[in-house]
Length: 133
Image (cartoon, rainbow, N blue to C red; front, side, top):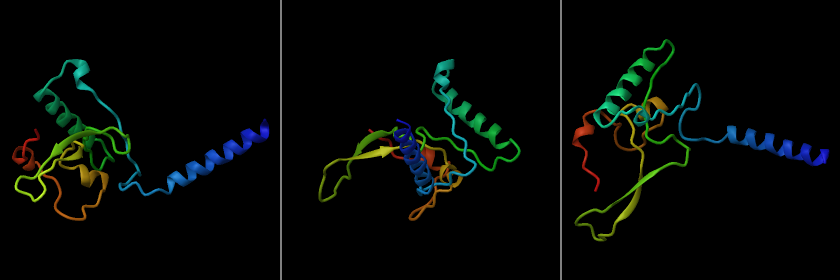
C-alpha cells in the first residue's frame, strides 16, 4: 500500500512540474485573479460598469501594481460564451460558432498577450462595435 502511495505521489509531483513548463500564452508571474459578482449586492446595468471601473482604478492605485484589467471569463477556466456569426455576401453563407470573452481595453497589455496581427483594443471600440444578434 505504501509503495502504491509513493508511486502516486511521484507521478503527481512529475505532473505538476510538467504543468509549470507549459506555455499558456500569457504571463503568469505576479498575477492575481479574483471574481466579483455585483448582482449579489443589487447592482445592475450601468452600475456594474461603473463599479468595475472604480475597482480597476483602485487596484491600479495600489503601490507595486503595474496594471489591472477585467474579463468576463478567466483564462484557462473552461468557462465560455458562444455566439454564431455569418458574413453576408460571402461565397459560403453559413454561420459559424465563435467563442467570446468580454474584456476591458487593457486586457492584452495587462496579461502580456502578444498581438500577432491587427491592433490592440481601445475604449473607442466600445461604442463602435457591431452588435451581436
